[in-house]
Image (cartoon, rainbow, N blue to C red):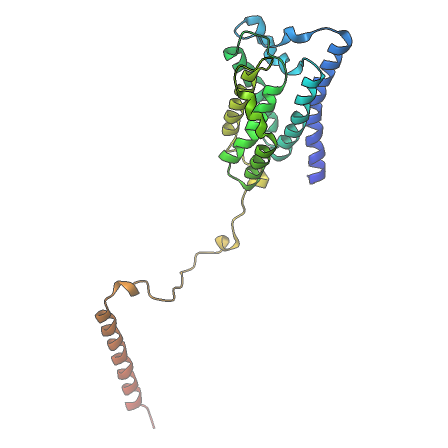
Length: 243
């Protein structure tokens, strides 16, 4: 697949995910219905529905836009560079973040896609740690540069912010990166060097391997024996040559 087509496909997939958030918020805005009750409410059975619905709901336009932009960028990056595991990774981050929030977070309604965003940031960064391919390391460095400010979002006791979603989303992202670390993309595979494909050859050395293991006297003795053999051969060849 050509890079331009692959990028367009990746962008379209990420855009489709973000578009769902906008459709839901526009519906909420037009109808003036507050959908906050569909958020995650921890440790209550009726709050389980929020695992599916909470990331789709946002408190206001600012909340929606602040999640849409990174979700579009990170989603495109994930679908483009980690094509084999992108959809499965996204779904795992989406569902596991919601599940852990339901189990561990405060007893308030938790809404918004920020947990998914933190999960994707963590997923891309930790791929660089677990996979150690040049591609994954470069992406990890870019994410660190662009989203380093997100670390403040995991600090507790921030009024009006579900810091639990941020923290748990980040932890889920680490788990998902580790879970898929063996599913290497084609671009991450390293081709063997040309000399590695050649049949094994005996290594040639400038000096004999035991040169420095012999004493000076032993080397002189060997040199003398070699000279004696050469002289004997010269004498024999000159004595018996036909004239």
